Image (cartoon, rainbow, N blue to C red; front, side, top):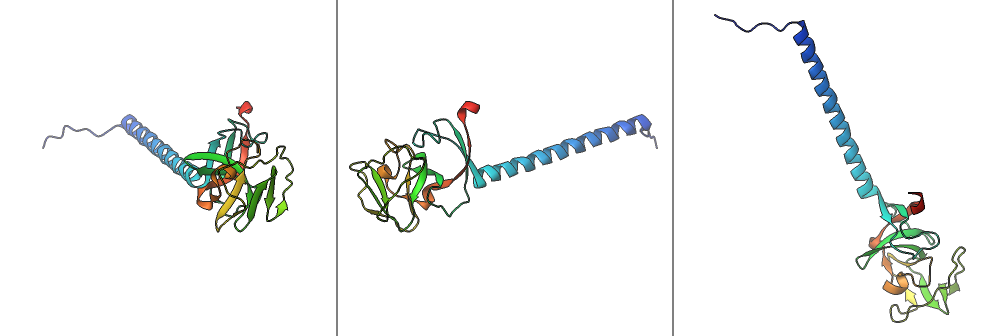
Length: 182
């Protein structure tokens, strides 16, 4: 029997071991990168979201172009919470001023909730009623919220499109990154 194959020498064995070690390192790197990608996908698709503020409805607190981070898993929204909303095919950032069961009235450039005139600190504009959009008094049903922009004169908010259903709230704003700092 003719055996032309020779046994690998020490150099060849060392080279094979180095190649195998390099392949294992590449495999570990790719596995870690895949795990990181899956974790980031889950985090940004289900837990938090990013939004560039689309308009001046929340001026002066939020300005057009500011980047906000919002928490998607929150379900218990309180008055004065700032939330991201998807309504009528557009995205808005607004402040909750009315919760389920509240009676909302906008008259005489003022906001009334359950018959009480609301004085909000940090709101520098009057709250005009938009004629022809929402009928007042508005009684919020189960899972409905009344949301207003901080820049009350001209903001597209619940005075324009009515009550916001809880399914239309994308999340609670938790962080702001100013555009002039980018």
